Length: 571
Image (cartoon, rainbow, N blue to C red):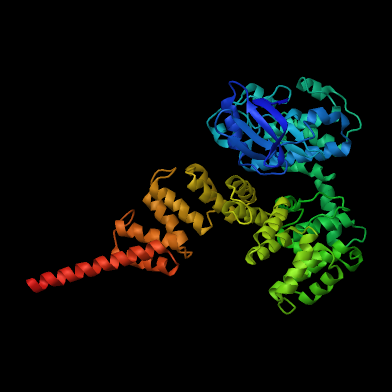
């Protein structure tokens, strides 16, 4: 039984066929426990302990991922330096993610970092976490002595992402000194640490700077995860861009992941599933790569083309540049490589440089998918679903989803929601849709909005719909909430604005809603002609309610016309 700030955690339970940990609140900590649930259930990141489910009736229980490696504090003595550097980067990865969502952990310490069997770090215990809204309301937070930033000792409302970074610096010190835990700041500053890697020491000391503004962002620490600094990675990619023959195969493989979304070979000394992360970092650092398109435009000289990965990157580069003959030449040379197979699959699927052939497209996509290519796994799921093979589709979507492919995660959520190939499971549906939505998948965010609307969780529905505000269904749902006053103050003018945006994209329900607004004069002047005009558009886009209402209006109009004519004849 492990003990956290707000409750007791019992690992080793089996829930729905998987090993989980179950957390229960201690007496008097129920409010903090429920707060943790509200925060963690909306998080989906590989370095955050995974939420599965919680019970709303007594006894209160939070069901979550079971990290079998225990907490970091207990493991420090057996860690190698390469583990310590990577773990520091993984903690920073989790912090970067929650900070991007406006969440501050407020209790980062070695006890609140769990490890998997493979020593992968995952942040846990969000009972003390605060949000930007909490900060505006000046809610105080209570961290743990020894890890608490100096500014919080004077003002408990002074928490910020920088105070989390300070605590990260102390955790880095714990790993560097192998101390049980820090007693005070003086102990941390005065202890002489030997044999600490230069880059690690510099970042660690910057993290505990007295001035919060001088502390690095989580993303600057994140590079430790790769065993090299940002400058070193920049230099590696600079050599890659200039065609230096000494560039290492693993650097080419990182580039192939970024461009293609493929999966690392087991022989490559890189971390799988880092595609999105590398992409975001490159976009944020202008000296790294100016934008995503530059990754495609990097040119590899012939001297670099000694490995399969480099040839696969070249094939994809040519394909995306529209040079299909060259793309096919390189792709066939490495057709056994997942990226090479993917390129050939795309060429046959789209008819680019070859005669369009769905059978050949499927053969090559299947080869890429079996090789672990996440995009191809999603495409195979789509193909199987269209063929009516829902069980096989479910398998491919799951494989893509487990590689953090957002399309695969969304489609897997849809399968669970509607019960395609599996019994309907709303909890699993929400789990996968939420993971996709947190990666910026618009359809998944829209799906989450619709689910929350159906559950009458209106604030959550509004939040998800606004994240997908470019999608016409989300636009309609936002308009609906403003028209009905679900979770917001009713506002017909705002409702019309959102209905209009969705209606202009040809969404039948929104066009029907626009007609109804004009029919009853809600936020606009009553206008039967405009009502009829919008209803007709909605009917053209297959809205059955509009068809019924339009028929009723026509019948009523005809009835009144006949009545008027009858009265005229009598007169």
